[in-house]
Length: 274
Image (cartoon, rainbow, N blue to C red):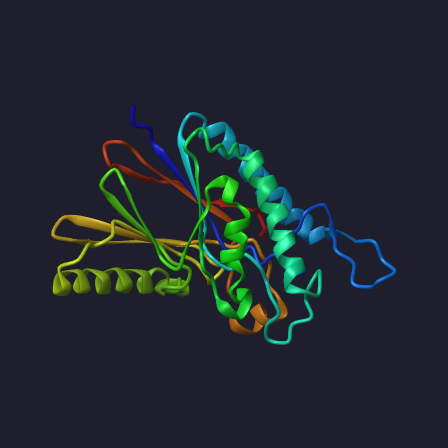
């Protein structure tokens, strides 16, 4: 019997950043010969992010019981060492990998991930400035979850073509919000007509730490584009490159029924303003 597929998309966790999601406590390998371990606990801001992630997990477990769940980690799993940043909870990339693994193992457990249920875990590569080539290694860590790694993930769910990539179009600002997504969908349609290739029904991208949904209709056929939120508060670097812009924190979910109907849910966003 075919079941509704429930898709959960998380991106831009940036684990290792002191402004990103972090577990309550973690034991990391020692840096010095006279140490046995390093014990690090989350900060107040990191606690807010972690609590929201766990809140999302519990809602997923409750609401999606009996459905096949497809989890996509859509890039920038770790913070890495970039732009000479000192806003780090731990100094090494290997630390960031361990932090991400602990966060994700807890999240997947709380969300009710089950290989026996047919649940799926996909990793999509992020920005190399942040992650280098670590995300493929992270995906290999989750081999017991049957995790797969992609630069671009193209899924077909009950006849609907759903594409994932980390960096695609921006959200835009103010009255222009969503215009870039529509332009991207138009460009994909043009390419599909010229090259006689598939036009996706839904494109999921990330990177901008700000979420939006837009749609483009042509010849009575509608395609959708979504930019996902993040799990990182603004850093000093972020304040410079996205001044005065909102910074959405949370994840997105959508479903595809056996009849091929796509249902896009409101994003699970953390309350930040007001």
